[in-house]
Image 1: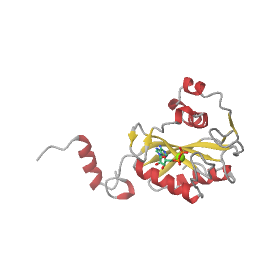
Image 2: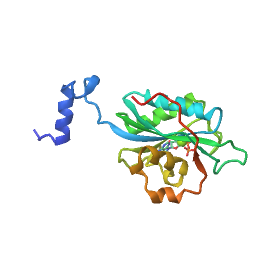
Image 3: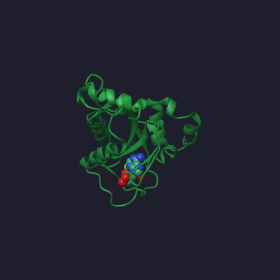
Length: 192
Ligand code: ADP
Ligand code: MG
């Protein structure tokens, strides 16, 4: 029989040792640090973002590590009279796979009444998977790191607030003219 690789040995150990695999009692994927970008500009956007952060914290196999404060931005690439956007970024530790996390994000968008009448339409809630550990993913449904995150001050500023090592000073400088400002605390339950 072929020798087990180191990762197979770890998996095999965790599969039979409930203490090491937590309450699942079977092999649990290693936790990954993921960052989710939140945005809304329809309805009570700040309240929706606060609800969404709580909902992210309640996802299965997932803990909320940190959430940024609330940021407010004039809309870009939108109809002239679109309401301002509110944005935030949340950091999760999750054992969900990246596709499963995307599905969970889309389910929360749906629960918040998200509709997609046309590209860049105003939205009750937009949840984008910005980073999933160090993974690079390029599938039909999912691109990670999010392809436009480095063009957007409303992503980079809240991301830099909670994960300063993930954003360089140059990247912040490159988007500094986009008129994003901090709009106060995001009212949500404290991270567990
Ligand atoms: P946008 O966020 O660009 O305004 P949508 O929220 O409507 O657009 O997302 C459109 C599609 O983008 C989704 O159906 C999803 O499959 C895809 N997508 C690709 N990569 C990502 C990502 N990293 N996070 C969220 N959605 C993504
Ligand atoms: Mg989106």
